[in-house]
Image (cartoon, rainbow, N blue to C red; front, side, top):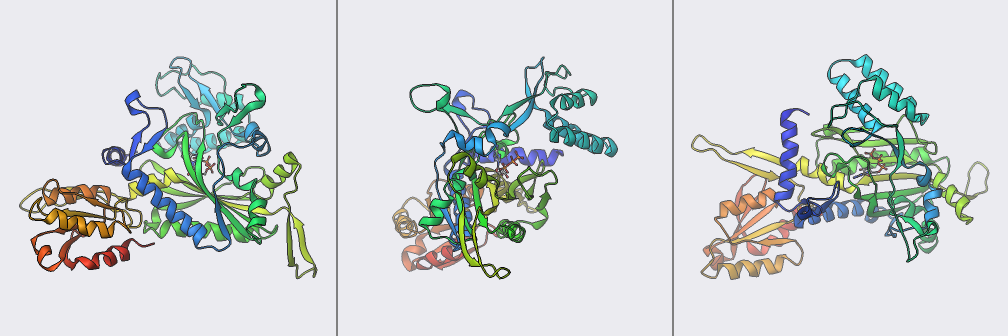
Length: 488
Ligand code: ATP
């Protein structure tokens, strides 16, 4: 990471804290690793991102509906899905520092180092050897690679490594009063399984016809071996997932459609297209027949924000096997080739899965700007969050010019009308300029000032966040002016 991007990232993190977006969890107890709380502005921004997703997926598609399934699920579900046996990362400890690392991440960092030193051959060779070892689940080989490439612990600087072990990422707990093995249940590591096990409930109760989708937003939990990069890798996070159920044989067509549609969703927020790229998975999970990530260029490099996966009928077939219940759908449509209905089958699934917290960070980084406003006469600057108005936590702030002459009362009267439709903030402290800067820092698109003239002709000054231009408008036009810009 170059100095300036490193600095930018640090500035975004401290801005997020200073302005009530993200706080470290349990801060007065020195925090809890890789767990974060969203503050007053963060909660609003997060809700707005959820709404943008929900509207695009559920409201705009008549064949997609949304559910909200429980975090706790029957433990057999995680057996069926493969998470109990296979949802793990290769872990290694340094004996001197007692620090724990992901073996593959240590190797990836080394590959990046070789690349940055221009040692492309070495980088490629190591990448190849690591991929082979991971595919074969050859843990001793991973350790050998770490030793061969002289990888030292970033903390102790020594190469005194333990064996590599598989570390399951699921959190477990006990349900009920008696803590024996049978009662062990898991905090869900993904929201998708809640959709799979309910797909027939939704299909029947909603009279859904294939192709159709089920969407869900909710918490997921992973005991990540190491947590890095702020809210990129958390132990408690939120996902927005949609499973789209299709007729076998049509999955490629739907995969391509969703891959494109999801990138469009990102770009519709006005983000520079060059900041995004697709990453195709070449090593597919055994059940998948295609997988792409949508990656965003964070200050520390391109990182996955969303995955689009063609999961075949793996999950539903597994649940059929483990639960003993039929997971088939009856398709009454006539196959033009045979002239007969398609009949019973287990649908194929295309999944779109986006991390809400990563989307949140992407949005903050994208919006954050330290703008130089210096003129020949004086030096000046401001920090502004150029958030899309739909996502802004506060839509407008209303300021009485002074605290007397009936201006606060008039300002509150205007606010009382607007707050029915929009999240509005009232501020009367400090000079107007200072109040503008505070609102710029949280991305408020409009500031409305009530002055003495307002009492005479019911007009106000409205100031636009991005251009900082001010104009005089009738107070009863505010509803429309704000509505036009912030409506979805
Ligand atoms: P990664 O390779 O970065 O660990 P993943 O491939 O395991 O991610 P998926 O299981 O496909 O991720 O989950 C879908 C989305 O959930 C990811 O694209 C990401 O945005 C988000 N996500 C996954 N793990 C975390 C985490 N620990 N913290 C925050 N978001 C996460």
